[in-house]
Length: 118
Image (cartoon, rainbow, N blue to C red; front, top):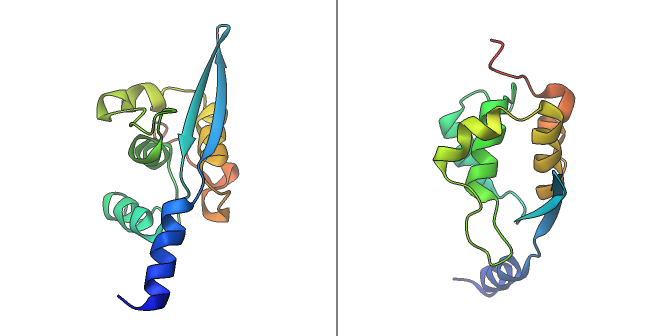
């Protein structure tokens, strides 16, 4: 690996996580997530071919399952949680996505379709 590649690798290891606090019936749940990477987008568009043109609630749930962590850095969700995430009010689902991951224009709230309706 080149010297520049080594620096980028060290940088990636120090990128800080973002957090999202959710108040559920008086209990606060905190989720954490590192920024999306090119690998994440490749993985997501592999599962959801038109994600970049037409983000869906299904795809948002997948990226949250894939990336969200608890305070110890362990996965916060597994695939069994997908129906629960998809059943959340769309405003909460997209708020989790926006707070955990950088606010990418292609995943803005008004671009996300609730694919349950389609």
